[in-house]
Length: 101
Image (cartoon, rainbow, N blue to C red; front, side, top):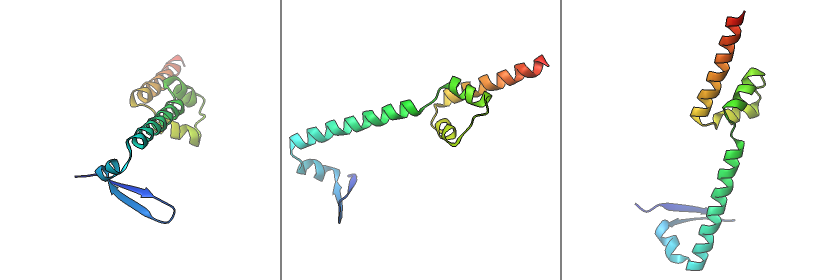
């Protein structure tokens, strides 16, 4: 099945099939659009990477009880392995403190 692309314009909505779009574009416009698309994807990936926190940052946040709304959003985007390791480090430190008393 052909994908349908919806393009919102000022006063209308264009709906084209993927093949219709490619057939209607000049090759040089298509090449430039692909380059721009790659640039957008690179920027988005870079922003995602910068927005993520690692296990040690999570550990410090939990240890200092500094959880804010921003922190919660960052935790939601963390890689599962990093999240798991950060929580394990925090729980291990609590266990160690408890056994010292």
